[in-house]
Amino acid sequence: MWWDERFASFDGAVIESDSQAKSPSSKQLSASIALDSAYVRTLVQEAFDRRPEWTVSRTESTAEDAVVCSGGDDSLFYWGEYEGIDWEKVHSGEQHACCYCFRKGLIRKAHLCHNTKKWAAKHPEGWLAKSVPESFIFELDDIDYIEEALCDVPEVRDMPDGSARWIAKPSITNQATGICIFDRVSQLEAALHANEDLREWVLQRYIERPLLIQQRKFHLRVYVLCVGSLKAYVFDQVLALFAGQPYDSELGDLGNLDAHLTNTCRLEGGVEEEEAVRLLSELPQLLAKEGMALEEAEERVQQVSKDMQAIIGECIDAVSGELTFFTLPNCFELFGFDLMVDDQWHVWLLEANAEPDLHQTGSRLKPIVAGVIEGIMQLVVDPLAMTQGVNASQPANLSGEFPGRWVEVLDKQQGRHLGSSGMAFQ
Image 1 (cartoon, helix red, strand yellow):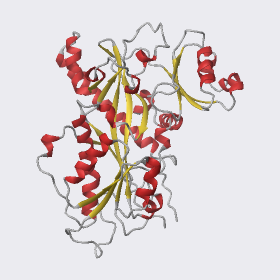
Image 2: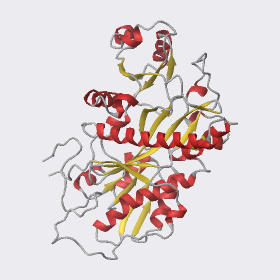
Image 3: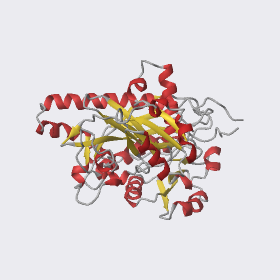
Image 4: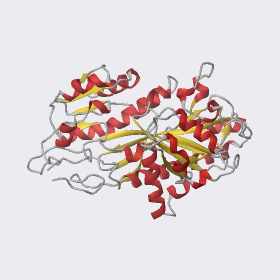
């Protein structure tokens, strides 16, 4: 059987029978950290240092080298780059890891488009049916056959020039690579020719009237934690990432991506970190400065938080029924969800990212990332220690030291013998 019952899951229970269960002891547990980012690696190391029952080995090598360093150890717990995971040990139950093996059903834009549309068709009254912009998968096998490929997307092919705005996103890239905003087919064709090596795209109706603060567009970056098979949590300290230039509500220059895209990787010198990276909880004060009553702004933001959590919970539920998102009871993963609020305060789901760049939180909000890490330790690492018969340490006064908390948005326990597809491997 692919899963060894002798080993524990993250579901909070020892998989051994009662007669086999161990009493708490003072034995040492082993963990390995193999993260490329020094920013995150330091915070993870500090979190383990607060737990003397863990002995930690570290490698600061590249992801390619980490395959050798981490894959060859005997640690119970691995927190590092995806490429460094020893899947043979994970599937046997010998090691717990920080990623799921198959998760493209969530993080690949085309897969997410397919899965959310499929769910919305079955649940027309659900959140995804009203919270995902109109989207189409566009596959281009040969750059010389763009017109033929567009036959599959008549909504775009037949639109009169300037009548609607769309955004084209390559399915597998990140950091806004290859993105094109267009209002005529000729602009899309030019973008496709400029990225001939990209074959799979998502064409999504552009949100033309985003909520603006200080004349700038922003999106929400939400940290989402999936644990085992399957619980999902949302971190309540949400980032608001702002574009580097003012937004033109007349949409006169779709090529000015610095005004339209809100990825922090696009910010150039001269943009202060505090202006580019804020917290959702800080927005009411900014809105009040622009004339909105503070009480109204706080109520609006509170509702955004509730809607956002409902959308994310349903999204995880939707993809967890697909073969392309296969959970394991001894794995967890941190994702970064991107959402946007329009000028009517409607919340839209844009995409989800694996291994989110926590460094984009910046120095001012670094305690937020520390809170993310400490919360993961409490939800994942400490329960694992208990299942191993070890009294997990409870660091003192953490509530005041680390801002934020993880809010459960989905509890879909599917049994330790099953992946999220509901299939048992013999």
